Amino acid sequence: MSKKFRVGILGATGTVGQRFVELLEGHPQFEVTALAASDRSQGKPYREACVWRLPDDMPARVASLHVSAPQPPLDCDLIFSSLPGEMASVSEDAFARAGYPVISNSSAFRMDEDVPLLIPEINHEHLALLETQRRARGYERGYIVTNPNCSTIMIALALAPLHARFGVEACVATTMQALSGAGYPGVASLDVADNLLPHIGGEEEKIESETLKILGRMSGARIEAADMRVSAQCHRVNVSDGHFGALRVKLARAADVEEFTDALASFTALPQELRLHSAPARPVIVRAEADRPQPRLDRDAGRGMSVSVGRIRPDAVMDYRFVALSHNTVRGAAGAAILNAELLAARGYLKH
Ligand code: NAP
Image 1 (spheres, rainbow, N blue to C red):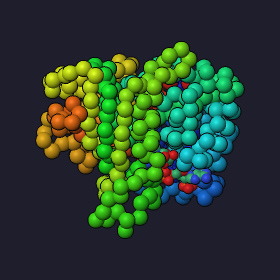
Image 2 (cartoon, rainbow, N blue to C red):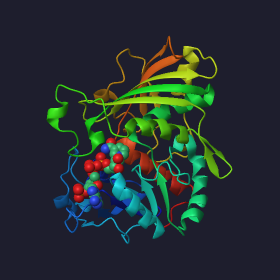
Image 3 (spheres, helix red, strand yellow):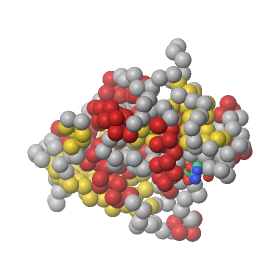
Image 4 (cartoon, protein in one colour):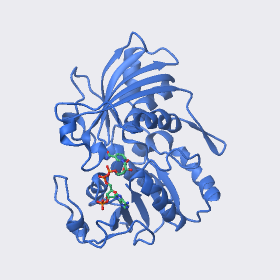
């Protein structure tokens, strides 16, 4: 077996950081060798710095690693970042400048013209931007690749097969988003018990802009955004994990329900062809039951990497409506970044 890539996690003590640690335990290509978080945690062994909130035990080898500051150098070949946005812009740039590939969850660089906003099933050709990025930013060996916002990933994965087969002219998305999406400790219990919150700062704008970049095409050395209108309304609901979306779409060409359903259910792409370790066999799973998908029952589909879709019906205003669900800290965050790293490894972008 080939030597594993050594991985550093920035924001390792947080909600997404803990998912990275969990998903990387026993990974065939990556092993965690460095952890970083805020000065509250620095200098402590991970087991003391981190209040572990996942059901399986903290992996013993990682528990004894000491937490560092999120600054280079770190003892690793590549960086996974789950830092808060404002911190990420300084730290991720510093690591890329110091020669590390940075695979980021944070929003800091997602919409920059020279930064891939990668979903390997949809837009692997956007990795061509890395050449432009290195020239523009003066990075020698390092670079930054981002994954989208957690709801955007779900919406883009549901739209991509429809856009490829019929063309999507417009999408109206109403999300109901899990509490873990707000990090820890997140939303105060007294705000969300017996309640829902009709505002998640910046979320609607992220869905509306990121989706067009993800579904855009390379035109020369830049991305031409998809010619589509996207409108989003986002709500925080009292669910632990699993973002849910009610979507309505207007298509460029007519499709009957069978064709529409088949486009979603039969969708596979490069990660499935390459058999990447974290790639689900089916990126989109279509549920036929009238009351599925549901967060508690369906968020772990495809080991948390599949988007579950259901309730596909013609719509009197747009052409079709349906619902979608995905695990916000797996496909929506840590799992997405790990799949990105697996694609980067397969394409020769990672070095020991
Ligand atoms: P979180 O639970 O609040 O964790 C934040 C992490 O960042 C902790 O490890 C924290 O370390 C560290 N940190 C905070 N301030 C820092 C500073 N000044 N310097 C260094 N480290 C600092 O947040 P999260 O939910 O994991 O989110 C992390 C990032 O991922 C955010 O950019 C978020 O937008 C993005 N994201 C989250 C989700 C999700 O579903 N939660 C999905 C997609 C993307 P300490 O423990 O030491 O304070």
